[in-house]
Structures are given as structure tokens and as C-alpha cells.
Image 1 (cartoon, one colour):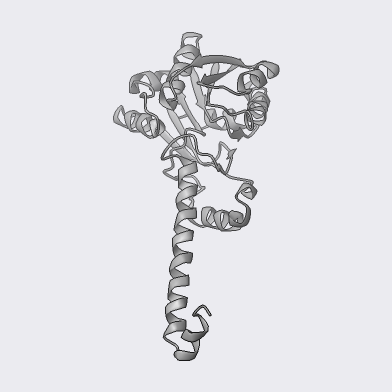
Image 2: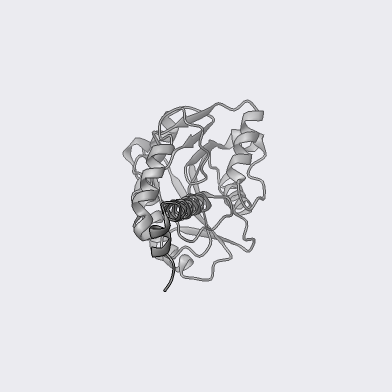
Length: 250
């Protein structure tokens, strides 16, 4: 059996499309009929996330931790107890491709670290083009990358247990697990083949995660713009008394 863990904290805006995509991936013919169990771990949810999952027939597990590492670990433990041989991990604001699980298993590795894509930056309004350009110019979306994303990971149960599982960290639990896997000598595939599309968050859930990375780009752009304005003002003031006088209030 293959298990898929999705941690969620108040994700009613995204969870429907995320789970629908997983249900499609779970029925991929390349899995040859192997059972796939999807488990949504509800971490301190107060919105309609659980209701949406129930309507789609997806099993849930409730924790009150506000800790993504603990949520992922709780889901993994339950699926392992149910007999999962492989664990796929993604996020509640992420849509996996139909072949996501098939591509992970085809790599014949102990663990798979996949890359991510973002197909809609529009929630950032006037900054959408800037963020899209920054992402496409700086992000390595190719085999051999060294990205670690909880939104696109897979690991054999045996390797997961040898590494000690996810630590109870509020952020970077995925990085910690990969480091533990490397320490045990696990064969890790750094691949762009298993595809996912994640949201361009305007409301980050985990400090230090992808949403905060987006915020950092926005902050850097704002600082650069402010610097350019200062230089422009200084240049105008140094261009002669006429320019300087033109900038003084009357």
C-alpha cells in the first residue's frame, strides 16, 4: 500500500483542488491497482477544511499542535501502522500531477526530493510579473537540483524509519528529514520528474517556508525601489538649483 500525508491548518481555500488532484494520482494506471490511502492531518483547523475532505471521501486525522513536523509524523505513523510501503508527502495548497506517485516510484530510490512549480502569481497583483520572473530566473527546476520541499517528497517506509521520521519542528522539518536520510546512507533522487504546482502564498503558514521566501523577494524589491528613488532625488538635487528648487514644496 502507498500512503500520502497532507498536513493542513485552515486550508479551505486550497484543500478541495489539492485533494482532488491526489485522488486522480491515486488512480493512475501506472500504479497497477495498488491501494493508495490519502490522509489529511488537520492541525488546529477552525474552518471548513475537514468538511471539504469529508465530502471528497478523504480520511482525516486531527492534531492540536500548530507544528507541521509533528503533523507529518503523525500521519506517517498511522499510515505505516496500516501497512504503507511508500510514503508520499505534499501540502494542502499544492496540486500534484496525475503521474506524481508513479514518477516517484519509477526512480527506484529510497527517497525522492522533487521540485515545485507555481502556475498562478496573480494573487500578488502588480507584483505578479516580478515574482514570476524572479522565480523562473533563480529556481533550478531540473534533475539534480538540491531543493527540499515538503510539498513534493516521497520515501520508502524502511528508509523513513531508519532516519527516525520527521522531527517535531514548526519549519524545515523536511530539510531535517533529508539530512537524517543522508546520514543513514539513503539513496536520494533529486528529480524534477514528479510534478506539483503550489500556491503563491500571500498568507504563509510556516515561518521560513516558501511563503516567506516570496515575502523576502517583495521586501528586496521594495528596498531596491526606495534606493532608486533616493538616488533619483539626490541626482535631481545635484543637477543644479533649478531642479532642486522644483522639488521644494511651495
